[in-house]
Structure formats: structure tokens, C-alpha cells
Length: 350
Image (cartoon, rainbow, N blue to C red; front, side, top):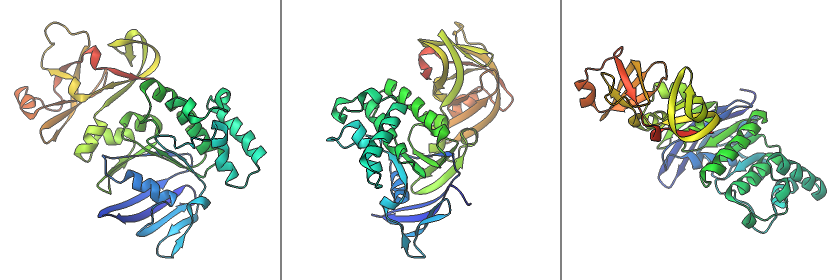
């Protein structure tokens, strides 16, 4: 691999062991997901040079950043990395423009030039009018926009995103996610997104890596993980149904199928439906719930106390029921069933 990130390293710290092999191509975004304590933050710190490796190497675009066998270590300040933390990590005593300019000046760029570049990046993320504000004068979403501008202004060769939306309210999260998505499209280097939110991973990343107890359990694109989860955590993560569609008022059109939703919306959205929110029936349910459709079961998988059913058109989804319920309905692959879901169980992302 001549371009992008190529890393395979071991970290041993306080009884914890992380063994991670990571390849990210130029212009590619990879999401690293896992439960608390899986090693996600340790991985980010290792790439940034903030945590020493017990073994292995980190290379970017063919340049060695760290190689334990060769005894080589490149200091964090020499690694051209843009980092966006979940709380922004802005300097409280500096204005927005000075926060962005700080990273440029630390690379010996003259202050006047650094401020010009900082102002340009703040304008790109919609913060031009607030460039003189200090962090305490900004909302959570505005602080994260400044953090994004700071991460990108130095023209990093690697972008690390550590739970960048977790501290934001829903509306701020939606707006900033759009801003980040726009900039990721144009970023020429590799990007690593650390998140616990499957929607963020599916929307922003080209590839997903599931990390549990310091080991990679599974990697692939969203469809690969959704269709064949390799662990209970992956099944829970991938089980969230994400259906792109177009909303108009309280009607959501997904392909050729229409769903009634509880909130007013318009334009392109993504509907989130939890597998356990979908009811399964052998016959059309009584009372004719508004969100009801007939479909075929394409695959059945057993995960302990749950059975996952993957269904086909008109709105392919994954549903979950108990083994007793599946046996009582005599469900097998190929069975024709009726599905229903309440409008209040459909959550939207824009």
C-alpha cells in the first residue's frame, strides 16, 4: 500500500490489550465502532502518537511514523494530523479565529497568514460572523464547527474524528453532520471516525470496523455488517433499519412504499426503525394499522434469545422476535408475512 494509512500495532496498557490492523485509502472514511472499553480511543491515541506502541508500526503515505522493531518514533507534533474531539477541546481564552490559527502558527506559519487561512476556514463552516467570539460565547454546535475548521485548516494528511457529535443536541448534530459530510467528500487523505452511533457510521463512512475487547470482530461496508453480523454487539448495531426516503408532511415514501410518520418533515430523510419495533403476523393484523405491508422472509438467524428475520420488498427491513414466537408462527425462509410498525416508532435523520 503506497498511499493512505497502513497500521498494524499492539498496545498493552493497564491490563488491556489492543491488537489492531488498519488500512484506510486516500479519500476514504472508516468508522471504528465498539462498546465502551473496546479500545477505540486507545487506537486514536496510538495513531496520534499519544500512546506508545508495544509492537507493530504506523505508516502514512509510505512514511514511517512509528516502528517498534526499528526503534523509530515520530513525535506527535511532527505528524500532520487533524483531530476533532467530542467536546471541541478549544482554548477558552482564545477567539474562534485564534483557535483555528493556533495550529497553523505552531507549524511556523506567520501570524498574519495563519489568521487569513483561519478566517477562510471559519467561513467554509459557516462561522465567519462569529470568528471573534470565544468558546464560552458559542453554542455546542458552533464550537464543533470551529473545531472542524481547526482540524482541516492545517491541511492534515490524516483526519481523526473522536465522537464529534456526542455532546450536541439533535438539531446541532444534524447540521454539523451535513457540514462534516461535505468536507469529507473533498478531503484527500484518509479519515478515521470513532463513534458509537450506527447512523453516523452508516452516513459518513465508506467502511466500518467493529472492535470488541481490543480485537477486530468484523469489518466491511454497512450492508455486509447488517446482513451478516459476526457478534451480538454487531447484530445490535447493524439491526437498526435505516431506510432512505422522501418525506412530505407526515408521509414518507421509501421506494414504492409509503409510511405514515409521527412528525412533519419534508425532503430527503433517513428513517430509523428498531427491529423490535416491527410486529410480525401470519395474517393481515386486525384493526388495519396504517403502516402495514406484506412481504417475504429472505433469511432467519438465531442470536441467543432472539430471532432476526430479514425481509424483502417493498421495504426491506430486519425484524426481531423471540424463538417461541417464531416457532409458534412456523416461520421459515420464504414464508409470506405481514409487518406493521407504529408511526411513533419511526425516527428521522436529515
